[in-house]
Figure 1 (tube, protein in one colour):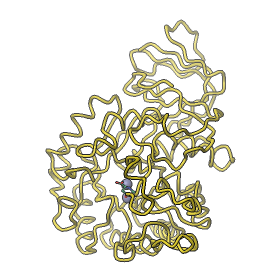
Figure 2 (cartoon, protein in one colour; figure 1 turned 180 degrees about the horizontal axis):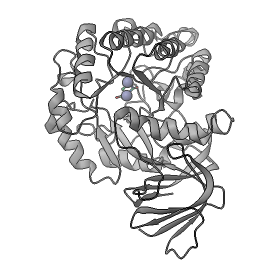
Figure 3 (cartoon, helix red, strand yellow; figure 1 turned 135 degrees about the horizontal axis):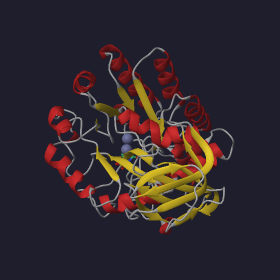
Figure 4 (cartoon, helix red, strand yellow; figure 1 turned 90 degrees about the horizontal axis):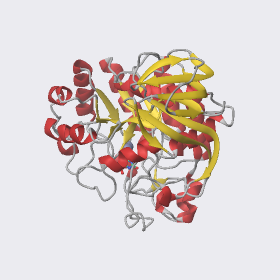
Length: 422
Ligand code: DOR
Ligand code: ZN
Ligand code: ZN
C-alpha cells in the first residue's frame, strides 16, 4: 500500500510523538514521519484536524463464536472492532462450548486470520468454566494463549484461585478475574440501592465486587504474582486497587466507558439494554472510576462488548447481562475525557492502545519508521448520534443509543492495509 497521511496530529507516547505532521506508508511499512514532498497515489488529508493513534486494542470482548453466532461471530465482531478503530482484541472464552482446550483455541486463531485484525483468544481458567478443574495452562500457552479468564463468573473457590494465580505466574500466563461474589449477588439484576428499591427489583450489592477484588489482591500478594481485575465499577474496588498498587502488589485493572459515563438512574425506564454485569452504579462510583482512569489506578479502557439479540433483551428482568461497545468506546472516551480537558491524547493512547498490549504481553504497536502501519485515524470533533441500527455489530444492545458523541474513527489500518474506511 502506498499512502500519504498528511497534516494530522500524530500521537504515540511510546516514541514521544505528539505533533502535527505527515506519515508516508509504502508497502504497508511506515517509511517517514515528517513533512512529505508528496507524490503518493493515495492521500488522506487530515487538514490539521484529524488525529492518528497506534491501532486501538480491546482486551475484553465477547464474540460468541462458536455457538451463539446469532449474536455475533468473529467476522462481524472484527468488523465492529475495525469501525471503532481497533486493530486488536482479546476474546473472552464463554462461548458454546467454552474455549478450554488447545483445539478450541485453534478454531479461534484459524478463523481470526480472515478478519484483517489481530484476535487473541482468552482461554478458560477451569474446564467448561465450571470452577472445579483447572485447564492445562502449558497446553493453552503453547497454542498461543496469553491470558485466561472464566469471565462472566468468578472462580468461586478461593484456594483454587490461589493455585491459578500461582500456576499462571510460573508459566507466564495472566489471569483476569470477573469479580462478583455470586452468593451476595443472589439473583440481583442491577445495582442495589435507591433505584433498585424504587423499581422494586432485586439489587446486586456492591460488596459482591469489592469483596472478590480484595480477595484476588490478597491472593496475588501472597503468591507475589500478577492478577488482572476486569471491569472495575465501584469506589470500593478503586480504593482497594489503588492502595494495593501503592504497596507494590502486581495488580492491573480495566474499566469500560459506560462506568464513567452513566449511573443506575438509566435503568428507571426498565430497559434491559442498560443491564450489564457488573451493573451501572451510583454517581459517587462513576466519579471514583473517572478519577481512577485519570490518576493511573485504572490501566485500560475495555468495552466488555457483549452482544445479545433484541429478543433476549426484550424482558427487563429476564434479559441476559451485557452491552455492545466497540463502535462507541473511542467516541465516548473522547467525549468524557478529552473534550472535557481531563485527559490528553497521550493518556488516551495509553488507556486504549499501549497498556492493554503491555498487560497481555503482546508486541507493542508503535508509530515508528520501519514498522508495519497499524493505525487509527479519527476526527476528534465529529459529532454524531448513536443509532443502533447503524452499528456493524450483529447486536444493537448499546447503552449509548440516542446519545450525541463527539469524535469518530474514520480509517483503520492494520497489518499495513486499510481495513476500514467510514
Ligand atoms: O455483562 C456481562 N456480559 N458481563 C459479563 O461478565 C459477561 C458478559 C456476557 O458474556 O454477556
Ligand atoms: Zn465480566
Ligand atoms: Zn466480559
